[in-house]
Image (cartoon, rainbow, N blue to C red; front, side, top):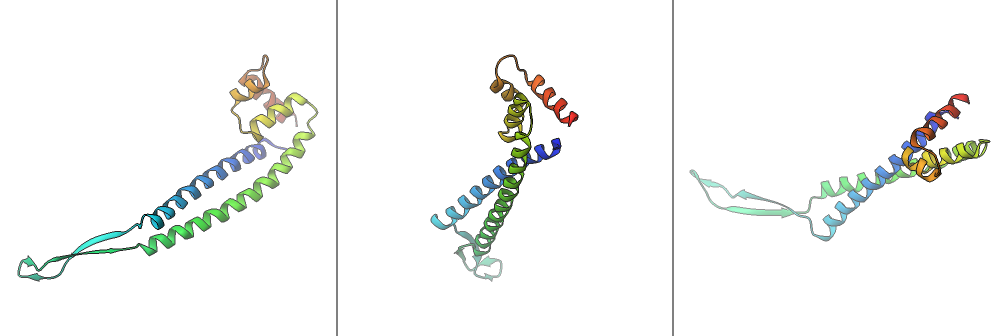
Length: 148
């Protein structure tokens, strides 16, 4: 397996988190529109007699086009999330099988921490404990992947 596939898995995780954030944001906007009676308002003049307006009226209403577009955006984000979940599950099973075939336990743990759990190299070194450093862990994985 190549490194770009492992990095793609991490990117998919990031994309999924971003989609969840977007879904939450649009859902909150829709909920606010529905519960708080989100209204748009404007004032118009009733006409003129010479240079003087005859009066002004206030117009209020619910912004259905905006509401409908937010609902459509929410459906789109949910479909994108389902597709990302499917891709991620497929890629995860492929990555997990490849990791299980690695003979060196230390490299297996480092790769799991970095690419499956999404930890930084510093956090990987901390989890590995002992005399491991971030650069040491990174270089060990680099050497392993170039050997393959």
